[in-house]
Length: 596
Image (cartoon, rainbow, N blue to C red; front, side):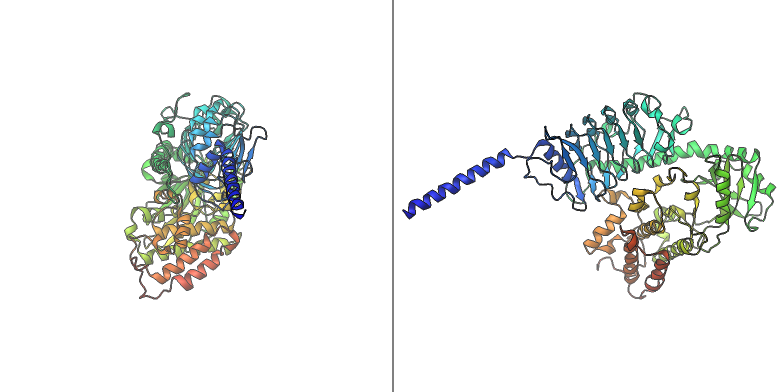
């Protein structure tokens, strides 16, 4: 009897197992769920929001950030903003052909925007702003006839705006601001309805929408053509290879971005630089006055204007977000830097002159001295001290062999003191808003001077509070600034922390070597810290590195780039830490790259 009972128990267990297997097969994940799992695979890091996405579920409709149609159980919403997600966007998103709403904004996605999104013809809204997307805008987005909202601002997109987007007749919101776009804005179709705020921060764009005339040789695409550098034209195919390995397309995208940036620089020089010589002559000849601060310019207005009239493209020494910079040499041998800024609106004069009076009154050893300006009907010509050492950006990335450990520490110290003065000792206090290596200038002894302070506020759009310089400095921007556009002292501190990491590593914040790992310099530091390899961030070409001061400096940088603004120190505190813990290391404790 007992033996029979055991046999029946085994048979019952076997039946239960078979039923479970059959039920499991009947509950296989839907195709939409499979597509979302491939999206999750391409995400190399996040705040854990995707951990509850389970492959054993029959559908993804209860997953975080996902909504489905109750009748068809097809995915219609994918909404996951502000979740610190890093990785490339899977082309399998294009398989969600019933998707109506896609919101992945304010994360850390990189690589190209998948052209496969053009298959999602039911999409009504795409929000990808505030990421690190590169490459061109896919012309396939023009296939999404139901699209009403398209926001891809605050990324690193380059190339032309596809003419196909003009066919999106239902589009009511459109924003491509603060990218690296160039060429004519399509004037056929719906894009003609959008104003300058949709395009601000793209220095290479022209068109009716922004009141910038396109020249015949601008090289823009025809009405029905596509940018020759589009992802489709290159035949880019994404391949995923696990955590901290970027897809092949993202690598191509990064290299493409570098090439386009070089082309963009040449384009800007051709478009703005050559014409500025004539523009300056026209500016001052049309009636101009010289304003000097505290007798800092020992010349007559007539002598200065005469020199300004002689400037041409041969005197250009820089092109930046604020304007063209010229080398101004006076007859007595004194040299100055001249920055030309075109007037923005009718109220520009009164506001600008009031702010310039404040900036001209600021004198500090570690700030570039504003000596005066030339006021003309069409522009402001700001006259600064000329610093023969050029910018820190040039020194780090073109002649880094000149910067040993002591030189780099001194530069960091000088930049910190200059910024601390702006934050704590000026009246009124000044938030820089654009701390980066190209805004740190060097004198003949490689002493640092902070430049362009106050200019971001001067060029701010009073209605939108968007500055024209954000597009070129996204690698330095604090997360909360990317999200809100509101600058504080703590956003400056974050940018300073990124600057420190740039000086330490000898690489720009979004160097291709970081992008290949799906990171920027801050993400790379965080990874090295978790692996207990933080010293590996140091530039191998930097000689004389001392371990104690390196560790102390990394500790300061880590505090500065904290994702929480409240955890960041003030610049006064940064200066204190640098003086007490970084600048006084044990002289015998030299850094050995093989010992860590």
